[in-house]
Image (cartoon, rainbow, N blue to C red; front, side, top):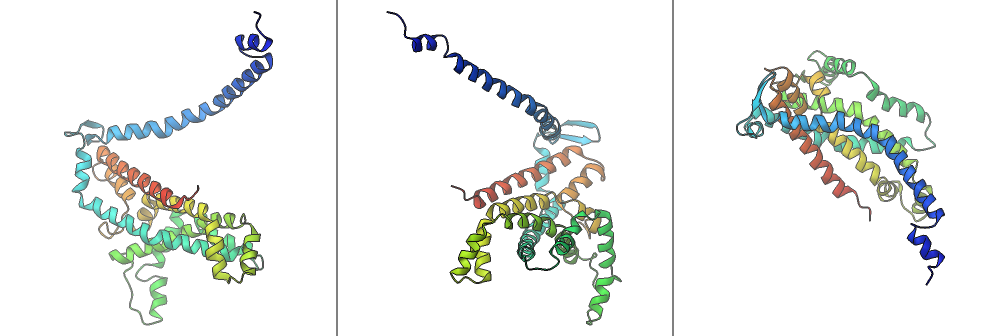
Length: 311
């Protein structure tokens, strides 16, 4: 029996057209990998390799470059459990997270909704004015805030008009944390507002008009129509704000110096102090950095599981 043309082609690996298509697909795949490979190698070199080195470093003890393997290997992590300063900075960071992040995101969402109104005059000015603080130099805004909240600063002068005694804002634990939270709100609310504005401008206007035709008031339209359609943006900003707060360093270092007596210091500020200021201990600092990494990863995972409702 003689083989049919189709069987003969199958025995040779397919028709010439199929072989050309497979060759083209293979070349496209190789071209794609050729473009991706440099970026992938760069990510490995600047991200994953330092993470591995930091984990190895967290299993060592010693000062400066004179490091030896810890005994036991988890000694630095065990030491964290008994470190009262670390517990203080951990509590401070979660205070900022629990108080500042919800207020900031709620305020950013309300401002974005107001500034998305096409009938509002000067929208561009107000958007720029609210966004501008996140572009201000950290040192400049820290100096301004330290001056404003000094004992003889503008805030106490203003409160004095109403008969309020001067407050030592940066010298008391609760007020120092409050100043830091106010600084974070002032600086980063506009940044998150821009994300919400972008999301609002992509919402289908017909859904809003349909809700209004059904008799919904402005609040009902906002809460039951607008907010559900912004769920992906809310999730994104929540994860970014949570990660940024857990890694907070700038404001703690420049605004309050972590004082008084570590009362406003963040975990990243304590990491910097352990690693580069007080008898540098790189192994202990690396263990602290891994605790921060684990917290960031766990909270991001929880937020994704709760917030991502896609089928």
